[in-house]
Amino acid sequence: MPSEYDLVILGQGAAAFAAAIKADELGVKTALVGKNRTRGALIGGTCVNVGCVPSKRLLTVGTSHQDSLEGPFKAVRYGKSRLDFEKAIAEKDALVRKFRKQKYADVLQGLGNVDHVPGEGVFASNDEVKVGGRTIGGRKFLIATGARASVPQVKGIEAVHYLTNEEALSLRKLPRSIIVVGGRALGLEFAQMYAHFGAEVTVLQRSERILPEHEPEISAALKQSLEGEGIRIQTGVRLDEVAQRGGTKLVKAAVGGTRKEFQAEQLLMATGRAPNTDRLNASKAGVVLNDQGFVRVNGQMQTSAPNVWAAGDVIGEPMLETIAAKEGAVAVKNAFTNEKKRIDFNEVPRAVFTSPEVASVGLTDVQANGHGIKCACNILPLELVPKASIIGDARGLVKLVAERTTKRIVGVHVMAPHAADLIEEGVLAVKFKLTIDDIIDTVHIFPTLSEGIKLAAQSFYRDVGRLSCCTE
Image 1 (cartoon, rainbow, N blue to C red):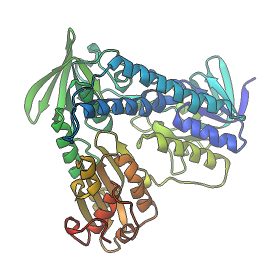
Image 2 (image 1 turned 120 degrees about the horizontal axis):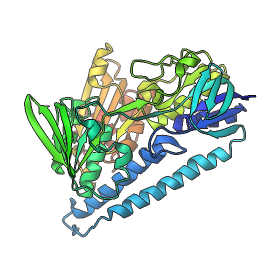
Image 3 (image 1 turned 180 degrees about the horizontal axis):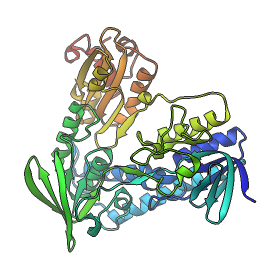
Image 4 (image 1 turned 180 degrees about the vertical axis):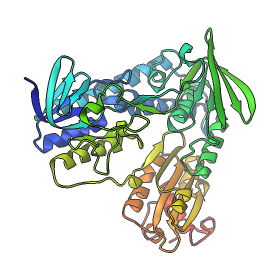
């Protein structure tokens, strides 16, 4: 006799846990069926195991090491730091174990309406899943099985011992050199991480610029900053072939019509994500996938099957931990209440945790014009923000995109130290349709980097380079 639940959640990452917590609050009898396809990911999924938590820890270690070697202040004697790579990995592993226990395993123990079923769930019909030899019945289902690293079928790739982000977080020996294929957030974060550790790094990016979805001014500024640290960046790259000779990885590519060969000790493929749906038997439940295998959902996170919802990376971009959690909670609310909630993805912030960081929310200049918005855009160099000079790091800029006549802010884009923290003012501006004047009328603390957003707003009316500090 199959076990019967009101809700069966397939997955055990951010979307699944947020859904389980919401279901528990609503008193819904739930089964959380969990097993990860991502190597190294246990309970908690990608983010805590092989994503956000470990990568940002190692990025911080690398930046701290780099900052101790050289810095902006003549009064400080730099150059004494030594990096113990093995210890950095061990400390990262300990942090992951702590978060996995405190934020997931312990949380799960406190959910009285949720049963954890370890194993990979596979649909047997539209109201049953099989987990090993067990059959679990449910009235409603949530697919939250996530995604894993995707590697393109380049000639020779099957014979090369390459890395994805999963393995790159757990190397036991620091490579002398590394090629990173991919110039978006993931690739650039790992590139700078390993450069700060002391490796020689080359980034190969297919498009004509890194971070192609971001504002071109930010792409250019970050490229200049990374290259200033010694990272070699090639854009407009078409991979032709990869190979391995002993301990050396070879990449043959066309760059601007010229054939080039790159060599390094390690090869990291930061080339996107593939959904964990290939073993789900989604069609047995009447769930339709798109051409890439991601689950199709409507605005309320419901799939083509009326009793099945989906959330998180398995539905595609944006693949962010926080939006995955929101999607999971919204899906459960819509499944068991009459709220019919929807998510405005235009209000979702995104960040690149390089140093300096990049963060943005809302529309870019090009996107705004594509939506028929007659926009006005202003760019404030970070050097005009007093706090940037005080801390000795003026790399970056603030770009505001506003509707020309109403001055309503539709996009905020920042490259600066701690940009991922600064962007929340922009999130509120976009979410609540604030104007340039609303930002100007808001008192900011001096001296702070967040003052840069106010200065960027003031620049629509005045030459802020000719203002005294804190001029209203």
